[in-house]
Amino acid sequence: MGLIDVGGQVREGEELNTIAIENWLKAQGVDLQGQVKLTQYSGGASNWTYRLEYDNYDLILRRPPNGTKAKSAHDMVREYRIQKALANVYPVVPEMVALCQDESIIGCDFYVMKRIEGIIPRAKLPIELELSEAQVNQLCRNSIDKLIELHQIDYLKTDLADLGKGEGYCQRQVLGWDARYEKAKTINVPSFHLVREWLKAYIPQDSKNCLIHNDWRMDNLILDPQAPTEVIGVLDWEMATIGDPLMDLGCSLAYWVEATDSTLFKSTRRQPTHLAGMFSRKEVVEYYLEKTGLKPDNWAFYEVFGMFRLAVIAQQIYYRYFNGQTNNPAFKDFWILVHALHIRALKLIGQHTWDESEIPEKYREILKGILKS
Image (cartoon, rainbow, N blue to C red; front, top):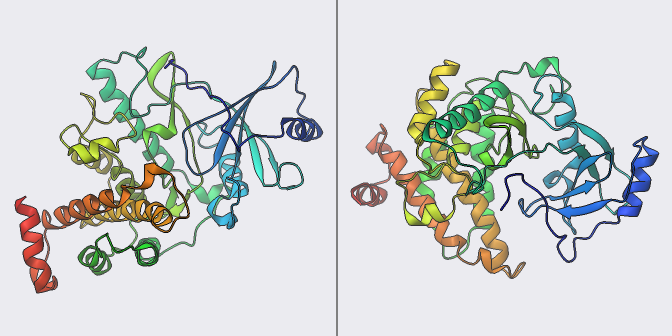
């Protein structure tokens, strides 16, 4: 596997015009030396990520996939702007090199940044990396600390004050993802009626407004090869915005697979949170709240919302497969994951204080049955 994360062969149909890119970079004042070595990273099904390795520069290029209709879904300008604005206050963002909005170069917006050489902790750590339980625990703490550090940035003193819409983030998120699920429903997935109504009934006031990453997972982090518990890079800022930090944490936990989780959830794991020394989801929350001093009245809301949002994301992907918009066989069983997330969200609701009189009678027995299972 190799300790350092590197690219592989460029996928068919996703080739880059390196001559056009090189000429454009040189026109931006980037003095490139030597013949380029082009590779592509396999991770990330959304935007395409390439490595351009020269004698004197090691660069990463990010661009949207072919056929992108809505720039808002793959906004290279926005992602570039966020990282550039954070350079002086959050030094683990990659160094930006140049942004291209001239579609005559390769047919789309793209940006180039300097590559951070390191280890990306994916579902399985490299076999060359042997971490003790104590080191795994320190890695876990350091990854949460980096999220806390992000949430404590005074974004009003950066160029990102207009990145979000301000107060009312929790409500906008619940209503927005509710509408997305309604549009993506197919005949073989649950309605999520109880979960959706519960979320609407318990929308909290924003705990505070801050810069949030909105896709915080360990496989979006880069670790120092010489000190592999230390985070030296944070990637994938596409969904970053101004919002509630507890929503960021709750959505992050939706991807946090524990050693005691079901086989189905273990099969979806994309970060090494199962290793001995890692926190449980409960311990992550306790650690975060203790260090930040935030005291939510109903933590369950944030975790349930994270489950629901992940279910919507999975269902949106499955909807494309169901309707023949993609034939990728990896997506054919996503509807099963949607069901599993539904059950897990219901369990989370039932395990916390809730007013049974507010739950429609026909759902009470269903919920009680799930809690017993």
